[in-house]
Amino acid sequence: MFTSGDARRGNSAPEGQGAVDACSVQRLYAWRINMPRPSKQARSRVPASAAPVSADRLELMQTFLRIVDAGSLSSAAAQLGTTQPTVSRRLQALERSLGLRLLQRSTHAMKLTEDGARCYERAKELLASWELFEADLRGASDEPEGTLRVVVPHAFGQQLLVEPLTEYLRRHPRVSVEWLLHDRGVDFIADGIDCAIHVGEVQDPSVVAIRVAEVPRIVVAAPSVLAGVPVPTHPDELARLPWLSLRTFYRNELSLTHVATGEVQPIVFQPRVSTDSLYALRSAAVKGLGVCVGSAWVLQEELQRGRLLHLVPQWQAAPLPMYLLYPYARFHPARLRRFVELMRERIPAALAVAVRRG
Image 1 (tube, rainbow, N blue to C red):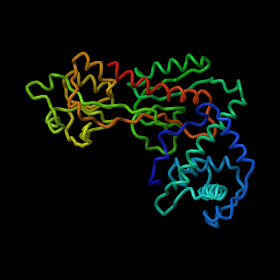
Image 2: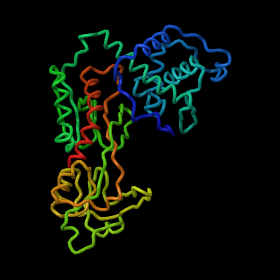
Image 3: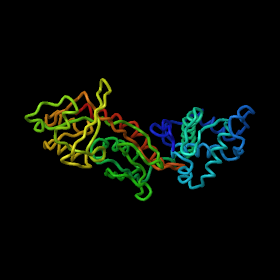
Image 4: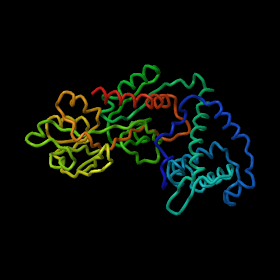
């Protein structure tokens, strides 16, 4: 398991992402064909037991990226459908060919070296450029077509992301989309899912996870909840009120952070209603059943109407990360790549507009 996740996930581009970088493709091609031995000084930086360089360096880079993303040699081997010794030999071959130590390994953990972190970022760029180069050579055959199966959280799929979906379908008339709304985890293989839009941290190391936005959250309640009591100014006072919970993200406790000072204040409560639906949470709050923490964009309209009040605005719950998820593969179809490209661009803008619009 990695002790440092900075390079592991979050902002990595999907394979085939972005415009073709001709220089990157040229460098990668030259690197694959010309495989010079490292200098004597460079060779001294890797162990003498490292395997000789014989494998295709593109495969070596892909294996290295998979090791980092999976978090261990064994997990990477399982994802690649090979053995742990094979993965280890590929890593050693890449380290020897570069004359660099990429990973520090111990019995219980692995950590990217400084050189390894740089290699990870550059390898992602080079592999993305190479795949897009291949796609460009295929020309018309790379036109998006077929059916794309996407899983989306209910509230986001019913409202916030319909406009980006519409734009995607207008751009690619030969593609159809199955827009599946649910908030549970996704089994990509068993359910035949191509992509998922996920809110919250990602625990599955077997998928590509691209962080595209953060969802701000606020504390709200109906005016009736505050009838006969002073308006709360500190989280301690919130704990004395009835509460609602969104069990996907919090159940009977959460923490709020002061915007100016950074002070963190935990709150413990016993919810009157617990739900896994953001819309049900909003409805219960409007009915005056309790205080809740929810996505700001979902609550803004009710705030403007005066049906909900924003409580302790100087305190905030941590925003929720939003990811695009899809399975690892050597090649992803054009319909998936174009969907990821568009959603990476449109989701942050759609979220910002929804929060402002209210």
